[in-house]
Image 1 (cartoon, helix red, strand yellow):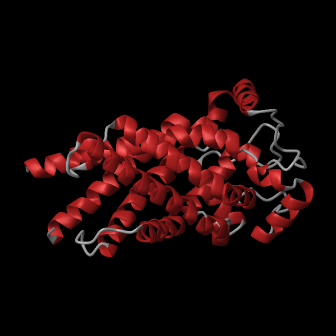
Image 2: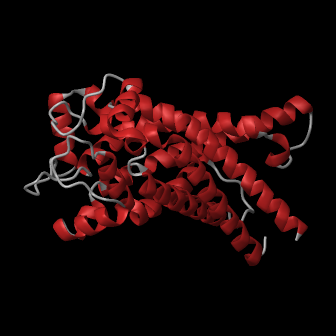
Image 3: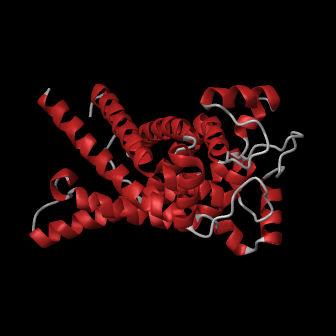
Length: 312
């Protein structure tokens, strides 16, 4: 593969990832709002409503806050997800190319893991401020005691004015640990895809060919959901820790939690092991179909771009 072809391949990955990320957020955002509110509610907060379950949360938010409540934080979510997926697939593609010596060597599971971890760390450093703003907008309810943000720009300006630049990187430690989420997801996805391709080749007595000819959208959807479930179960506690750290300080400017260890101690003390998995049901309901949508869109857009490049 020439240097020009490699560059085109990298940008094709980034474009496919960005489009896939946007499609995912647009479809699944209300469940993300519910997940965030469950994750931060330690039972001692007075500025968040209490929900019995996911369905009750969606009904209550719709009744009290309308569609605007269900799509709180939508703009930073779209921005963050589109940028994150675009950068993730771009960095992931570059890492795989580098570790495979420009495609001349087959990657082991460990190198798939290293590629995904490298991409995830770079994306976390680039996008953490967006996720801080998204979390805070999602947590604004009629019970909130501080002046609400009017939108993404007002939230950014207010955070910088009242808390400084460091506030935009609250939760960066668990975010970097959450790199393992993407690493696990992509490693499981790649290994499952390899297994399915080999299985289909044996079934049809054909030689290994292009994945695009052997796999269809149903395959990509199942592979995406399966890999996502494995990643969620292993890494969800880090999402709870990050969400709790990214909450807005009280009216005196004092954060509810000082650092990650403080979150761990308080959660374990007052809520036990279950506290680290609060909101996992809406997370699974959101992320399994979301992962399916993401990988179906990503793989099909990538196949179209490859076809266009060959025709050119």
